[in-house]
Length: 103
Image 1 (cartoon, rainbow, N blue to C red):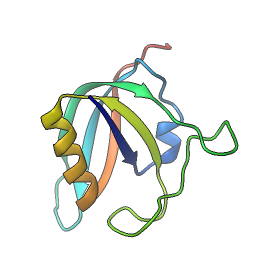
Image 2: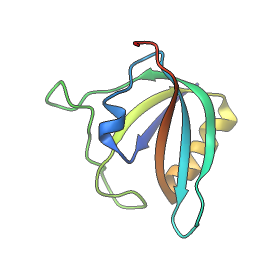
Image 3: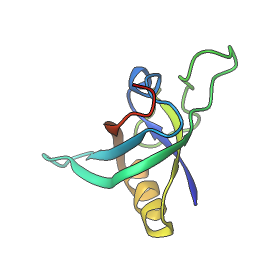
């Protein structure tokens, strides 16, 4: 399934392309350690902002992570999508590229 995920660092998302494989890491507010929420998942889409070339989209509404970031759509299993949604609601998400298709 497709899971839209807001990554805290918009510049990192700007480096991603469809087909890349990433690990998604959650830094949950109040926890001392980050944890991997999804491993080796495929980037399905990197939506662009209204300007056309910038992947950074300001976050709407409140909640954890308010203040920016960028959206990326990942292809994941249903259970992983639920894990990503929960982690994104309670903290900030980051990605680490495990394999880039455009190198």
